[in-house]
Image (cartoon, rainbow, N blue to C red; front, side):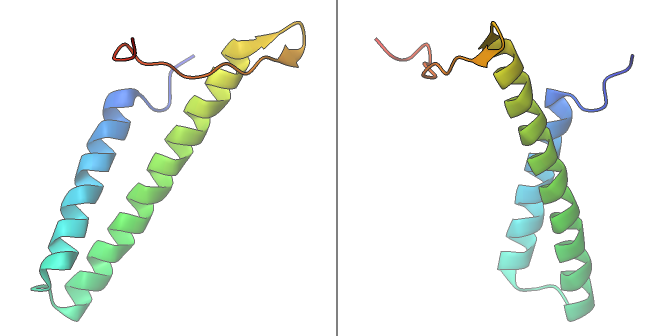
Amino acid sequence: MARKKTTPDFEHALAELQTLVERLENGELSLEDSLTTFEQGIRLSRECQSALLQAEQKVQLLLERDGELSEAPFSTDDEA
């Protein structure tokens, strides 16, 4: 079964979304270009939200034990 989304796709979409936000904040786009850019941003935002939801669901499945969800604090390598 092929994977629909991968982390690099999420990171690429997030970077593209940041670029669109910067273009909108610059204020030099015409109204039509601003609307088109905003539409693209909404699409990318939804893609990112979907990818994050899928990742959260995967984490929940990985933490599930004996039919019950076992929550654990998230720790990073930076913590001592």
